[in-house]
Figure 1 (cartoon, rainbow, N blue to C red):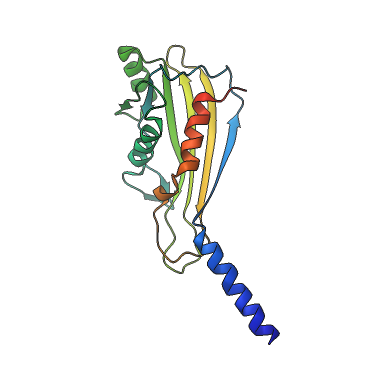
Figure 2: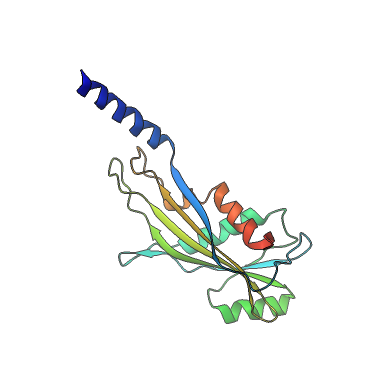
Length: 180
């Protein structure tokens, strides 16, 4: 009888954990060099992130997914948020200068791990660094690190981009508007 209770307790905990898909956290990566001065009247360019990799595999299109998700989270928050169709920093700064855009978001996909399969107990993991730069003098204004992982036991195989949820929106807002 105690063994049956223990098994039922374990099953209940596993099911509760499976219902909670992702665990996310926001970490300030470094102290900002200046106070973030982005207002809703400003334009912010978004540099194209390079595709994520894990174990030698390149996840084609993952960088574009992250960049598009950043743009989506900025709708209604800033005047304009164009995507710079380049992953090269010098090209992004040239674009900002040409278009007279004062701020640039540089997303970096540091870890992209799409390992989970149904019942595998191997979580998907993403780690993204968001850096806000002054496009005029190229100074770093603010940096945030976004980490997320799926549940250790899941009944569905959701891709890592599904973890770019409201917590990721908060990371984007904090890198732009946080004042330390």
